[in-house]
Image 1: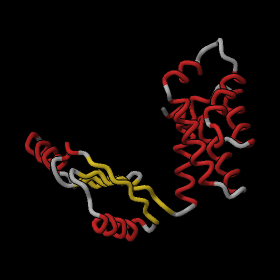
Image 2: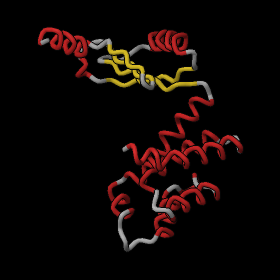
Image 3: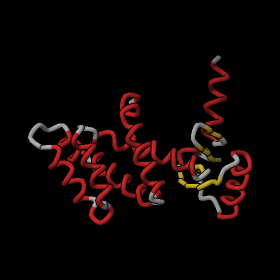
Image 4: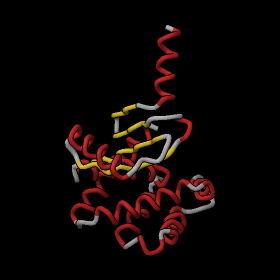
Length: 178
């Protein structure tokens, strides 16, 4: 995994610089996400390692599957990755690109995973508290995971706040066994 991130980093930085220069961060973010999804598909992933498929054919396939999202620069980016057999690092490129974008926009994506649905008022209150704590704009993404039993888990980058009942029970079990 670390090797893929190392390989992906210069590509992510280059495409981020290009997206900033052209003021098209959102478009590139969308395109990269779609392209990464395509190369992550098992059928396409098998082709990435096939000696029977040329790099040009791989690039054309991905560009065609991206349909109207791939302009000339995006197509050239895919061709460069294909030429150097780096299409498999596209998911890491996306992750690094999104991190650079979040830093640039002074924002952070936050996952709120709860056992029950969270009302809009509660979401607003949590987002405001996190905005104050992190000093950044917060994009809150809510998910429901009934296995938490109760409470919620908040993830913002490296920060994890586990206020779930299952998390508390796990901590209690750890304390009792040590």
